[in-house]
Length: 411
Image (cartoon, rainbow, N blue to C red; front, top):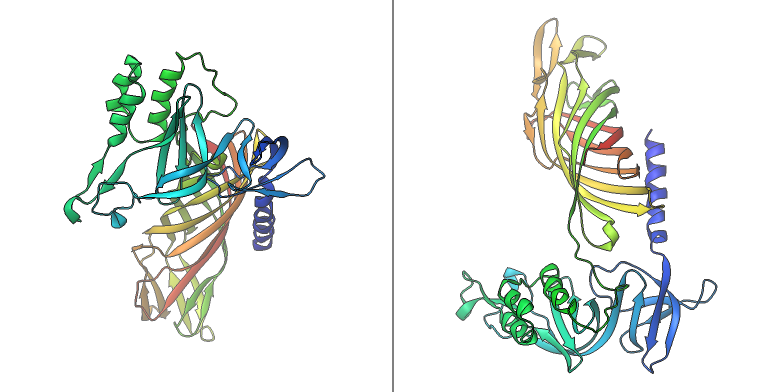
């Protein structure tokens, strides 16, 4: 079972890079030469510093960057332009805020993503630290929309916000009453800014470029029922009259998985939460120790676990996808009758190790599987060793297992 799991995990991991495909697009070089090319679409969550392309399937790969590329686009996905000007690199992280309300502008040469095209154009520049939005129209160069969080007068217990972008929007849309009235309610976010720019551009005669315009994205939520079978390795009892093993077991498990699919990288990443009930044994067990003079006993043991983790999808076609995921078990609650592991001689308990009623961050797991039509799932999962006895006990009882899980997406 473990060999099957490891083979699937390694094979699936090797497929990840193959999911980044060359797709039809174009580039405009720095000398204004436009070319139809194939671009390696990495579904960038942040603005790329460079990209890979080739003239056709059989040609060598080349690299585009803001120094040699004026513009590039992947049809049906995104368009980027080279911008030489001021970028505000202020962080949104509360621990990194400055005491100044003024933007921290630096002259940069970067790729901007075009979010809305038309009479008024909206751009974004995203890094791991922050997101900045910029605009332009036919009569002006690209200008940043100003927004910054800061600590007023250096007081780290307070956070103020420079929302100059609202007055900028009122000026940008001064001749459009509908858009101007929206300015005060517009948040400094991609979805909100896209909305106000599209309200204005819908009235404009300037054609928009729908093949590149970014559609507002949102989180997707899936809830699945996940029954399955756990294949337990022998439960190892250490430091109780030597080292002993309770036998390997096969038993059922049932889980409810909540999956939050993130709105970037073509929905390839998700956050998972899966409360799960599992049973190692429903019956009292005993094994001989020390030439059969003593007996190690344990009542039925089952548990509820609460793992959280991250999943990565790899699309095969419109209806089929592979995935791998890693999870950390943040909480385990003991259920069942078992309270102790006892060393017994003729009914007299010589040694005892208490089973833990609850544990935190005690194990992790890796899984790989297949999803069909976003409805049906099969997964192979390996859960690493965890000690089920109380912390500090000299004796340990280590449990690990592999699982076959079937899933059905309720919604």
